[in-house]
Structures are given as C-alpha cells and as structure tokens.
Length: 102
Image 1 (cartoon, rainbow, N blue to C red):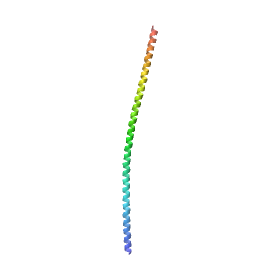
Image 2 (cartoon, helix red, strand yellow):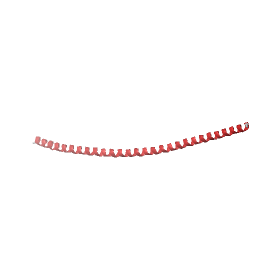
Image 3 (cartoon, rainbow, N blue to C red):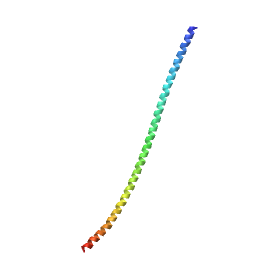
Image 4 (tube, rainbow, N blue to C red):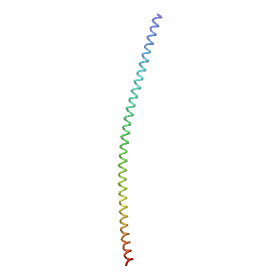
C-alpha cells in the first residue's frame, strides 16, 4: 500500500511536471505570436504613416508652387506698374529738359 501511494505520488508529480512544461511552452508560443503580431501591426502602421507623410509633402509642394506663382504674378504686376510710372516720368523729364533748352 505504501508502495502504491509512493508510485501514485510519483505519477502525479510527473503529470504535474508535464502540465507545467506544457503551460510554459504554450506561454512562450503565445508571447512569440503576440510579438510577431505586434511587429506586423507596427510595420503596417509605419507604412501608413509614410504614405500620409508623402501625401502631405506633395500637397505642401503644390501649395508652395502655387504661392510662388501668385507671388511672381504680383511682382510682375508691380514691375509693370513701375515701368508705366517711369515711362510717364520720363516723358515729363524730357519735356522739362526741352523747355529748358529752348
């Protein structure tokens, strides 16, 4: 009877050890799977962020190009107005010089 009890205890210990090893293996597998899934999600999010950043960069470039065109147009108008004013002043100056010579 004592031998049977000892044998039963050894079997129970062996089963408990097997259960602990199995639980440890399952724990490692769960952690590995979670780590892989996290890496996959991280890579997906990084790609999405890169796409958004590229889109925002393109929009900023387009906006900058439009602002530059608008500024150039305003500068050209100002130059034209200054040329017109200079032309008017030139006519007045030429008339004044001619009147002083006569």
